[in-house]
Amino acid sequence: MGRAAFVLGVVVLMRFVAEALDNGLALKPTMGWLHWERFMCNTDCEADPDNCISERLFMQMADVMVKEGWKEAGYEYVCIDDCWPSKQRDAQGRLQADPKRFPSGIKKLADYVHSKGLKLGIYADLGYQTCGKYPGSLGHHEIDAQTFADWDVDLLKYDGCYLDWTLVGEGYKNMSRALNKTGKSILYSCEWPLYVWPYAKPDYTAIRETCNHWRNYDDVSDSWSSIKSILDWSAKHQDDIVPSAGPGGWNDPDMLVIGNFGLSHAQQESQMALWAIMAAPLIMSNDLRDICPRSKALLQNKRIIAISQDPLGKQGYQTFKENDFAVWERQLSGDRHAIAVMNTQEIGGPRKFLLGVAPGWKLCNPKCNVTLILPKYQELGVVPVQTDLMLPVNPSGTTLLTFTSLNTSQN
Ligand code: GAL
View 1: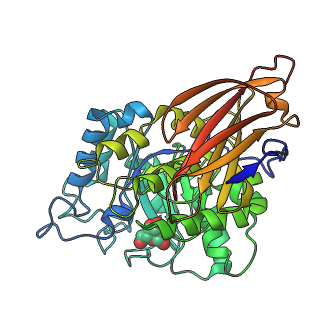
View 2: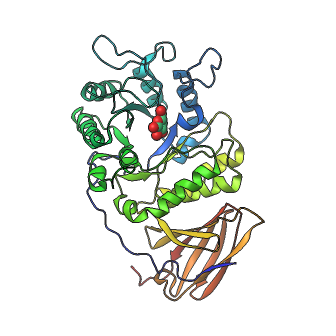
View 3: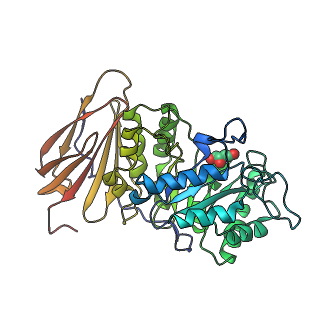
């Protein structure tokens, strides 16, 4: 059994290190869908028409997002990743979509996505080519920003392949300025720190002033080892990264892979809970046309989404790690607090974690209201201080709760 009697007591207030990029966007972590992890660089529309990177894929995803409750749950951006363009720029030097796979062009696709009440995202790279070896934006960032604005694109994921790391910062700033100059609000998703970390500590003040979210670490894949490595990295570097998150700018631990092949249901619950605690963008990469009902219910769980989208906009972090348990906490608005308890032991059945509601917890002194969200919803009711909560936690799963203060004098 694990025990933590001091959680909530260790929560310290951290200040933002900088102002956010002032484009009025991403006041809450972005929610949407992105093709990369699930569909990668599949360009073979002849052999695999249903899964290749084509306008059809994004139109179908937009249709499903409206029909199957995704839009209503908050998922808003339908995003194209790498491998969309033609290998050649047009006669005016502009990027153009591959004519076979996107016969109607990106502007028409944006119109279609907008007609569904959704937004369209696109991908480019600051180097001389993209990671998938499509044309890069080096020397073309102004014309590319203007092209995306002319197409009515709403989000740009800007990658950092194929450029010396010392030039990456300038590259990200240049595109940020170019997007701003178009006069259109385009959410700006960066990978700046990911390309700097191998050589130096990234400048999170500048990153937050430049980008709406930023990838810090490796690409997610459809496996528990990938999710674990992202969580380990985030906990290890939390003093560096957590203070820079807040309305307008967020740390991006990469896509949600829930609904694919590699994670057990308990592991999917861990990804969803921890991404909400980390105030991470909730950008799914899966096949929404064919997803199992349990994964769908998890991704659309309104109580978890409410934690993710909490208006206070404070990123949570790990506060306890012992005896194969890890506890993560996030301060929420309205005298509320979320706690995620993860069982990192990958053998056996559910293990009990004893959460002691200690006198030091201002939030629950003299009492608070506790709601269990994962593994199932249950109102645990009013809990006075000095109560021990016994929480079963599934192997590689997460038990998620919220605590609401009933102490009226507290603020
Ligand atoms: C990687 C990036 C991935 C994906 C891929 C496309 O560098 O981190 O998320 O965009 O490039 O080639």
